[in-house]
Image 1 (cartoon, rainbow, N blue to C red):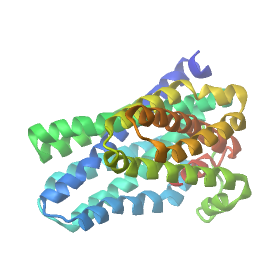
Image 2: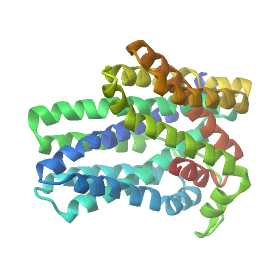
Image 3: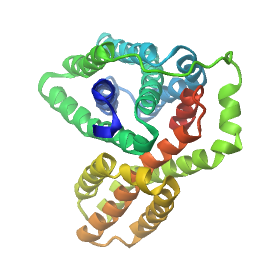
Image 4: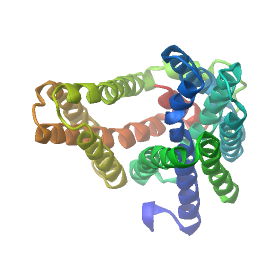
Length: 337
């Protein structure tokens, strides 16, 4: 059977993966929220503060969220996250001026994100057997990348043709689908944590068992963010097309996550992670030598291929090291980096 799952397990994994896709489609449409803030008369500073307020709750709530899902299970909090994202996205329709409500709704989205994504990734890891774990998490992650292209594209179409009110309604509709899919999913088996809410999350983050993986993921995220944020300006300065870099990035990462995750299940995590990290570092160093469209495509391919390989490997490593009753905390710490 695919992913080593029986029919029931495969259906459950598919429902959670598709729910994650629709949830992230909702999330990614809000990359266009700065346009609305500008229309309301907001400055660049307003955009930065409002968009950034999402991180206060998405990161700040993770210790509490991870305690909940390790203690009480995944499904309830996936559903709660989808509903919170749905309502907070829809409520933007009520805002017609620069208002503290923009911060409130954006911070609610951050809470919904923390609840849903941490629960969903942990649930996916629960379902897939250890010998197919990286492959399963790679497929799960591929649908996330796909959502990043679908959400803003459809959002921009609705915005250009129907306006912001319809845009917010359309965005929230993605989370309706996510919530319905979660309702139809089965409750995944998990080992209940006996720990009371306290410092368990922070002890896990500080433990030597996870320090190398979390540090690696933090550096990986820093490299990814730096490249994606600044490559457009760099290529424009070189008078090169930007879209080629991003098309190659999206296609390569999606393909590699879908079909490359199995490699570390077969050959071992470290044997895949080490060369991928080297290629990732080399690709970033090579950016300064881009002087043609072909060079941009080649660098983008190396960058995307190595990043696409690293995500499922590192995610699987975190789960491999986690105790059965601390998977939520482990995934929360990993996603926070």
